[in-house]
Image 1 (cartoon, rainbow, N blue to C red):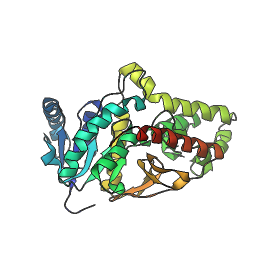
Image 2: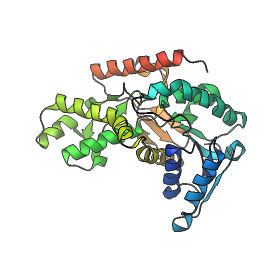
Image 3: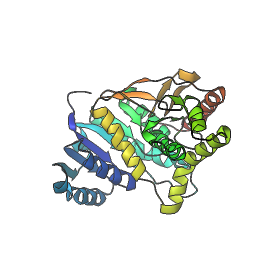
Image 4: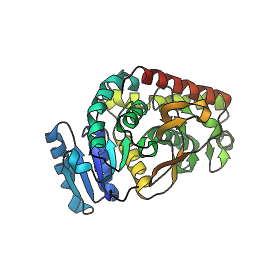
Length: 317
């Protein structure tokens, strides 16, 4: 990461449910000592900054304030959550045209100021908008990443952990592809502490693998729709995913996360952004990690990429 950035500073653009929840989570994390909030509604940004700042005496010292684009130039990470919300019955891809237009207003403001920090795109549809941010900004691909399927993968681990009666942190499995309806649960490479997931299932008395894996994949895919139907929005889970990604970058952990990043030929996929496990550290994405996929998983991944490419081809950046 460039030395011109303040490694203890983060910016959050967009102060809706996801942005404000992410800001609150980042305040509690202790990763940063300065946070600036931006929103098209300046009063909203000021209100959120005040509300969160009032809790600082109960945690760790931190400067939290509402600002403008001039205030984000030295931020180590710029978290972008701005965009229209996903409505009940609306897919993430339905949001694309509205939110690409919003990004056409936001990203040039960042690029024109030669910001040297990471861009972490969270707004949906995250794969399309990460691609848009990459193309509009002209930044290196390693510095423009999306939250991708980090939350989806966490949902899968949670479900498998509950099902198998084990700590979900011992479950190693990925959701790959689009963060959305065409995402793929890569069960062929899933394991529990090194034991293939199907073998571990049998250890726990579960044998109907094909039926179970389909059910889990559907539950993960529909999680956001269920939550939106019940409370109109999802924000706590993604806020924790944002915190985790920031943590990996700031601490140079070189952890493997399924973030949205540009594909350049792996699995026969090129010039599209989607989620694959990647090594992430202080300089962003170091490399994608190849995982074993079944023939059907590979076919589904390529189909997911084709769907995203079709949307991208219909947009002018």
